[in-house]
Length: 286
Image (cartoon, rainbow, N blue to C red; front, side):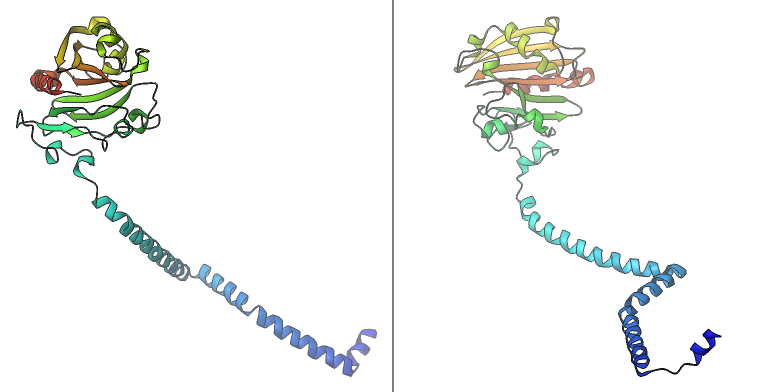
């Protein structure tokens, strides 16, 4: 048979050389794929032995964890000095008695005077500094950026919230600033030049209540003079207001802004803290 005779043929030199070359190539291939074979062998072993695979993954996670810990540690060190430098007055949700000085007129209250560190409008020079007293147990609340007017200073078209303080048992107070141009075209107008107390509260009433204003909710209004500054004062009973069923307000104009001070309480708070809220409003000055 042809196949048999071919099997008995001796190897020629060229055949021998080819065989050696083939053998060398085979050895090279084996060498080149040794690591791959080792990897696949390890993978198969890991599949057969889940413990081995888990140990390998654990080692990787430990290495990654060390890198993350090192990164966070370095980041923490770089940020820590800035955290430690925050002044007490800039801390929020802390009782004001821990950082504000006692009032010179009534030691049972503390004295707050707004500075350029407190609000974007004060830093922009768009609001005159204001001051008032409040109980030491009250806490200053954070103001959302969109409500603070930070995004529109120094030319805001709508009122914004300057500062806000609260005591769960007594009520809350807030300072609201409104661009003068919203109420009159006369630059640096006094509050009298803007209009009567009724006209002013009709424009700013929704910012007192947090939603809407009905003239029937106005129980009382009056005019107060402190030096050269005139203030309009209001007592409102607002059953549908978001701020509370009882609101005391005090407003004045200075520079290019009208400043509105509001003290609010629900029925329960009003029963026990009406005098306290009245004292706070009385103390407000620009």
